Length: 284
Length: 350
Image 1 (tube, rainbow over the protein chains, first blue to last red):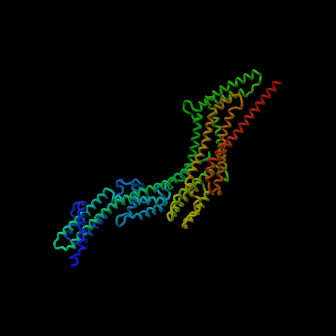
Image 2 (spheres, each protein chain N blue to C red):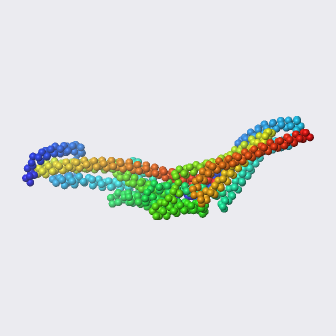
Image 3 (cartoon, chains in turn green, cyan):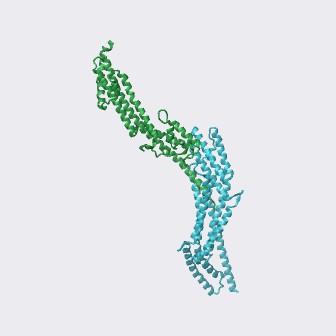
């Protein structure tokens, strides 16, 4: 214990250097982050076990976020047609909300298949959805699309459509108005948590009977929380960027599918044209 | 392909052909003004008026010739007097008699055609053989379309795709069998399908698939050839109508006392067009025998034959025949004139 209290000069220099940095971080965070809101920090109040406390709370907002994300996704899946067509992969794509075919049962749309394969977390299992679509089409042995006669090829195209639907529903949970509100709440919540940690840390500095090392640890943990909060904001921003990327990938997938479909449809149109001509042509 | 009922397409196709023939019939009736046309000048009546002008003009020459003959004391050929009466009879009442006669001539051509088309080769009529050759082309194009989608896939997906394509192709072939009966060309395609099916069941795709897969451009090119063929058939019908419309002018011009009568030229022209149709039907009908035989596996040459070469051949045959007949008639007229003049000269000497 003596060793701890009587720090050698090297250690002192280290702390002397770190202190201004820490204070700088605190000031920056105080300026950047909104005023504290009443939150979990109040419950923990005067606890000095800052390390346990901060590590707990820094995970807490993310867990809340996942829950909210899932609930948003569930809402989207349950009401896909209520989605404002803000995305390129809009409900105008065949099979999204419109009744595509009796082959799928239910209301006959690809979305109904997605609803059937929702897993434990409320997220649709896209792999199962794809295989269900393909299986149902192959069993039927026909397609509702007169341009694409082959169920296998049609199944692949509908599978891509289903992936795009899942992608855009997921993107919607982040990029839509509701998604943005949720993200804003999340940021506010984490800023509140960080602020309360900083407050607790400041309080700890003023306690007379606390050992210097514990005070310093409280300060360090407070700084770590700020860093964690910044990381968290960065990850939120990453999530947004990723969804934009996903959206564009979905659009590219759609364009490729359209090109492929155009090729198939052209072949069908030409063949049926020739069929009609051969049927009409007679000697007279 | 499920939504395209093949039987319906094939039956509707036959109806379309009938309706084309009927619409030409109606056009004939309308153009020649024998269908109780509305008041006012019809095309044919206008041409009859022009024909009458020709006749009057030609009559002047005839009268001059007659006057000259009489003045010179030459015996007048009886035909010189008969022709004006005949022309007047044909052109009277807006050429009603001529129009009816023209329609009769067309009927003669049509009857000859129907008889040619109804000729049986190996127990099957030419017309049916022709439709079988067409059916062969249409069927192969459809099957190719069902399989084309699979060529961009790989592995299990490709085998699944081929399975579906084979099932659909079999359904199409069954449809064709229901329409055309058990034919050797259908057996050929069935053989291909069976071969591919057994290969796919074994987990692979055999070379036989290339016997059924056609290039993307093929349906388009073949369709163009079919359009050419249909256009030629309709062109012949249109040529007949145009020739028929020129009838009054030819009749009017027949009073001209010099050279062979224009009406003969007109008749030869009319029958030449009919002969072209006859030739075309025979050529194409005989080619379809080969196209539907068990040896003729790829029938697409038939489209090129019927769309390009048969029209050329039929036109040149009919044109050549027409020219030959015309030359011989001109020669005959020349000879008969010589005979008449010879007799007259001899009579004068006597």
